[in-house]
Amino acid sequence: MIPSEPAKRERAFLVFAHRKRTAGPASVLHVSEVMKELKDLVTSAGAAVAASHVQTVQAEHPATLVGKGTIEQLKGMIAERGANVAVFQNLLKPKQQALLEEQLGVKTLDRREIILDIFAQRARTREGKLQVELAQLSFRLGRLAGGRTELSRLGGGIGTRGPGEKKLEEDRRRIRRQIRQIERDLSTVRRTRSLHYHRRREVGYPVVALVGYTNAGKSTLFNRLTGADVFVADQLFATLDPTARRIRLPGGKDAILVDTVGFIHDLPKELRQAFLATLEGIGEADLLLHVVDGSSDAMESNIGSVDAILGELSFRDKPFVLVMNKKDLCLPGIRGPAGSMRISAKTGEGIAELMSVVERELCLHRPEETGSTRLA
Image 1 (tube, one colour):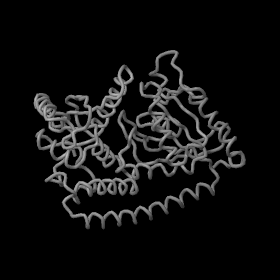
Image 2 (tube, helix red, strand yellow):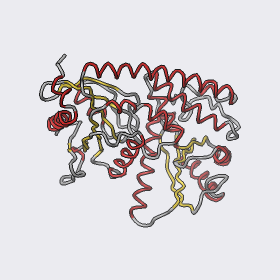
Image 3 (cartoon, one colour):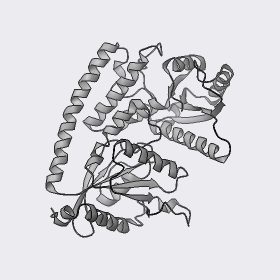
Image 4 (cartoon, one colour):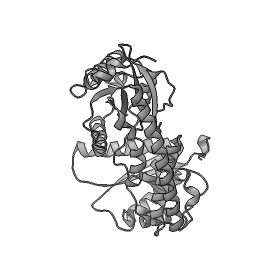
């Protein structure tokens, strides 16, 4: 773990080798969004950001991603800023990562390892921890093919946490055996969870699921609607494990509200299964509340990322309400997409109207259950 004292926090130098495809403001905005998200990921993992650098390249160098001149430039900037870890937005191949680490002289990570590190910190349930361990082992299994000379990386810091760390020096056979065992354990956990979902159906409560891009304010809205105390922070993936609570609808009936992990752009394939497994409960939902940070410049692209993942899960056709959150931070006159609702989970503005819409939508899509559910 990273020591809590600010002076001892790792200092990260962020790098993005950007292949310029378009010119003008749209390209600049895209790069700024990417770098802001990388910065948020690194700070969420517990490190301080010393500085960042975007290098425009015509093509990626097969051995080191960027050319020799850029590496020398980066090495100088890293030393000047007092950074002790380099974090690349680009997904690095094992040999690229090993050579960059050798030539830059500091620990070198890519975006995947930062996300893995955050997942390792945030997982609380047995399933969440198993999924993180499975993702870590799968990722590091590929690294055994010839990446670093030092695979264990024991000693703390971002990119080194989690239940899979002590397995890194083991050979492929042992890692694969561990993966098979974790998959069996996960199968057992999922069967138990399916029983829980079935019991909810027997009770008859309709299910409403919160979905949305990470840091959109889902957990704040969850707490507002349920009176719960789910952890809330201005961080990416502040909550990883799904949480369910009962809520009272305006007409006096009850429903189950489920909070889910936040979505993210371009989720690395090594993490996709672990991530999607946390969203399986959405399949039980009668209604989705797609929560969006209405104050974000990346609002449209964030909505697109969520829609793409819902499509991958075959959930895109589920009834949904688009909820534009953080109205208190939006400039006057800013409107969201047609049919969306504007609220502030923090101040409570628009919450009563949202609950009325939730009840109306549930009545439309589950009229017999919603109308007959008894209060507990």
